[in-house]
Image (cartoon, rainbow, N blue to C red):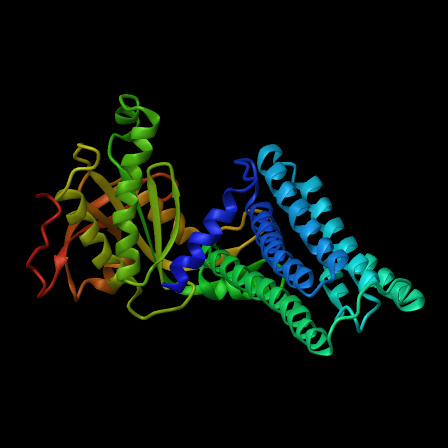
Length: 397
């Protein structure tokens, strides 16, 4: 309940002086400034009424004047949205009036250090404190009962500290939220071990891996289909497909490398080596095929070519801008060729991958094909996993 109330209050304060062009940081500053000003406004009204009740009319007039001017400043800010002017007026009011009130009441003790409320503008506050200490008490209009002085000591110190710690907790909470969002965003771009290494040292990060499997998949006849679709419809369709693939990447704890247009690239065995790198990737490939077979995407049936290869790669990030975790090496190029020279609905693999998974997967030999830049290569199609026939289909179905 308290959390809901806090969210409601933050949303309500966020409407005062709000501007659609505000950055998240400026919007937070506005919420804090308006919130603190309203707290001070209420406190000043109560302070003024108490002083007036005690017979200190001039001292009571100061906080009531502050409350009136602060309210007018908030109303003006909501109309004009001039944040710099609003911030200046609020700081000026909270700086001058508590100090003037201290002078009227007769110095630090008699005013119960009400000047503490001026501390929001620190350099000027310190100057006024020194000035007040040198010249106090220039005016002593009313003598308050000792009990009331003690009461206002508690209220002034407690009120100021409450605002300070409230702002501190708010800032810490916001900082933690921003940090969590930043961390989540970073981990959606880079593997955790790479992100941690990158945060620790600013340099290129690359590592050799001897046993890795790479998968490429893309849509058959994508270009002609794209020519018949509106751009947003095309992007929406690819988003649906890739979200399906992303779930499989999480399921098998693999590493999505990137998407290039309609091409989807996944690796297994990086950045953390694993003995079952080819097996895990082959299982994902089979489920990718089922996912594509069993549903429509934006009302369309799609066919994908899937290619796989296994071998050594170098993986990491290079450069200083717009980091991306990527792979380099002949094994990567060959995996791409497997996809490009494959058939719709097929999972085409090289001998390197076949030798790793042949005992656990049913693979159909397809003979040799001429691969650009590689010459004649033996290839196989992955049909299904042995002893897990249910739900899996041969490539030609």
